[in-house]
Length: 132
Figure 1 (cartoon, one colour):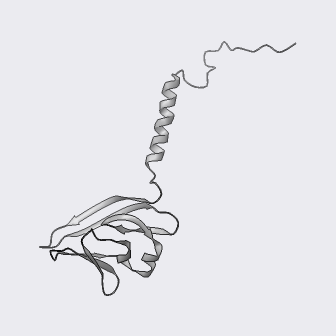
Figure 2: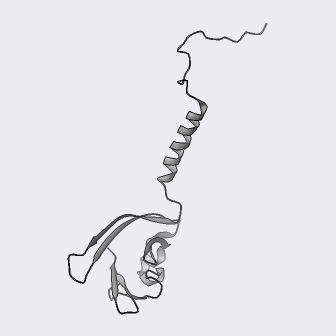
C-alpha cells in the first residue's frame, strides 16, 4: 500500500512568509539589477571623481579618477579627452599620442621627458597633461 501524503495542520509550518509570488519575483529582479549596475561592461570606463582648481590666474588644474574594466592587453588611458581602455603597449612605451588623447582638430605633442603630452588647439591654447 502506498503511503498517503501528509498534510500539516500547524500554522507555523510554512518556510517563507505568505507573500505573493510577484513580490518575490520583484525582489529577485531588484537584487540582480543592483548587482549588475555596480559592474562596468568590459572595455569601458567611468569617471569616479573630478576636481578642478582655478585658484591661479589663467590656469586651471584638473584631476580626475576613472574606474575602468579593460580587456586583456588593455589598460586605462585617455581617448578624445575621455577615460578609455587603450593598448598596454602605449603606456609601456610612453607613446601617449598613439592613444589619441586630444579632441578632434587639436594637435598632440609628447613632453620632452615623456611624462605626458600637450594638446594644442587651432587658436594657440595649449592643454598639458602629465601622468603620475
